[in-house]
Image (tube, rainbow, N blue to C red; front, top):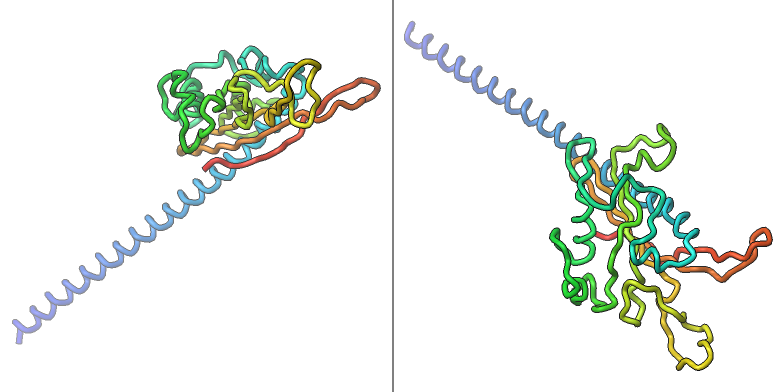
Length: 248
């Protein structure tokens, strides 16, 4: 009889240990699930904020583009936005200690690699850049921390944003660093043969935002000049948005 009781006590110990292990596994699963959900929510929040950050950078830059009379100075890189944080190169450090290399950002846009792009690289026809010699040649126009875009304290964001500008790829003049001379529908100057350049007076803008946990959003926009009109007695041309898209 004593032997049987000891055997039953041994079985109860095993059952108890199994129950403890099961509860520990369930607890660990709950912790992992909760942590994963928190991480997913944080990544989703960063993705949404990144989109807003890139869009805000484009809106900010439009004001500067409007004030530049000769867009060729933008395409050549000789004129930039007032929203810059130093020289248009080098590495910028984000709040989570990750970095953004401005030169690499431009190279990735121009030829899809981090190293410097040759003319042949930028003229190559690819699925993303199928226009050959009319491919955009992106120039940094604005760059800086989103929180510094407006007076201190107005924006609480850890995102860094860049905006590049290039000639519209619908141009057919094979001069990616100069805006087209004569837009479609406009009379040619006397003595010149008829032609039509659908990209004349049109610019492409590319905004990129960089944030925590590798958050990265890209938005591209196309803008064109509007016909000149008198504004308080001064003849001015405006800028209108032709297209907008998120690059995935």
